[in-house]
Amino acid sequence: MAFVNLGFSATAKSIGMFVFLVAVWMSPQLQANATIEQQRQLFRDASAALERNQTSRFDRLLQQLVEYPAEPYLRYDAFRRNVSRVKPAQAEEFFQRYSELPFVYHARAAWLKVLAKRRDWDNYLKFFDNRENTRLQCLAFQARLELGQLDGLLDEISKIWLRGYSQPSQCDPAFAYFLKTHDQAEQMVWLRIEKAFKARRPKLARYLSKQLDQQGKATVEIWYRAHLRPQQSLKKLAAAEDTVRNRAIIAHAIDRLARKNSLKALELWNLIHDDFAFSDEQRNQSQLRIALSAAYQHEPEAGILLSGLDPVAMNDQAYLWLARIQLRNRDWSGLLETINRMPAHLQLENEWQYWLSRSMEAEGQLVQSLSLLEQLSDKSSYYGFLAADKLKREYRIEQENAAKAEVDEDAMLAVNPSMLRARELFYLDRLVDAKREWFQALRYLDQDQIKQAAKLASKWKWHDSAIRTVAKTPHRSDYSLRFPMPYKQQVLEHAQARKLDPSLIYGVMRRESLFDPLARSSVGALGLMQLMPSTARLVARSLGMKRPRKSDILRVENNIRFGTHYLRTVMNRFDNNVALAAAAYNAGPRNVRRWLPKNGAMSADLWVETVPFGETRN
Image 1 (cartoon, one colour):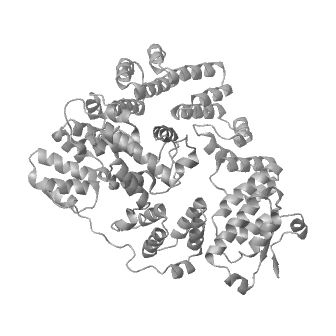
Image 2 (spheres, rainbow, N blue to C red):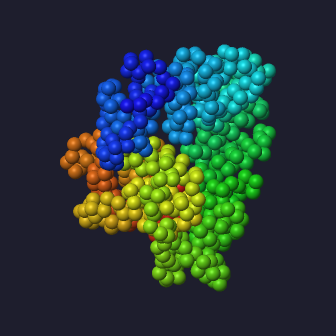
């Protein structure tokens, strides 16, 4: 059996370094005997052997996988596992050999951390690839400090210093050098303190004040108290001296108070603003924050506050919330004026074209209204369907096929090794690696090939990637790709048991997770139906089941059972109103009750438009 040396010493192999140190060429007959399913199982077995430190078994299994597309990922696993013992020449050879594979980026990060731990600064700078990773960037700064490579260093450090949130400890040596050598160090400290307060990191601002004199520390302490107790602080600050710092503190306190109580912030702002020489930006931003917070809090004064803003202060959110308030109040003439004042990128969205037509109708501009509705009713979209409802027309839903002909999977994968690796990694349940390979492959495909790729992902039942892939094309009418119906047996079974429309369950699933059974949100929601663990535990208890772990919640059967049970609960709570129940599923019943109209009934399309949370509204 022949071996190809990859630059690692025989000694390293003899002491148990894994077989990624050598490439083994198999005989054609041996490879032919291994089917793709057998190779996948061999991969799983090798991965398990590596986890158990069964080096000899891992070596033997790896020898049978040399031509398997995902085989490099076992070598990557072995590299990561043994990275503390790797030598620079070995790392260089590994990175060169697999330079086209996405895992090299992550393998290099692990290697850089080893070099930093060794304090091998020469090699650190040799291997550092200028990536946007703060820890590794700061280690590169430390390497340059150690080696005396100081040209341009202050400017590079300042980009990280001037961030309003805490930075990793690896940045401490660079920051110490920055403050020691910068000719405007105090100003740099104040700039970062301001950014910290804006980023709502008051403890960082307080920590940074240690770099200031006693008067500076006292000022930051006043600012800190204004952050925590804005209402009490504003009453005291009203009598303060008109200084640059005090104006900044007042503006910050107004912003903080407005987020909790917009009308109290307005009251105090009106008492204070004439006594201080606020900049135009400070005045505009304070008034904008008060007006937007009043809108979020559904205060009756919000419309007047937004309408009264200086046009320079108006941003997209101000236009959108003014329009939504006018919608809620059925102020059609005001809405017509607001939509016509919107920036073009907002005004031309289907949403505002629809409401423009409605406001025209209410104002008697029937011909123009009808023209807009007719244009919209041809679109297969929410607002297209609303327009069709107004015109009493059937919805326009015309299924097209993204890939005009049947995709030749073997031919396509033969010329797209990244895509082939992605398929194998998907079947091996290495979904993060699979997605990295998949979306790297898409960069090199034209529009027709991307459509074919979406078809392939759908064929493999990799639905979230199929949906994201077809979304990269202008082709939005292949509903079999964009709106699949996976897990059909479970969905239909639970739909029947809970007396739910299956399409509602699928709608929730698609919006919440794109049918990714392992989806995890930033706030901790899990699985197909994005259940919070606390919700899943409550549902499990009501069903007489034991307390589920996160892994239990991620299981498809459990996730659909818990999700449909909770969906039925909110449907019951809101009298089977789908709009209210869908909103409650996403944002919680308490929020939905708070958003309900105070006086009389409101049509669902109007109510949806005024939901404060963008994710829930969508």
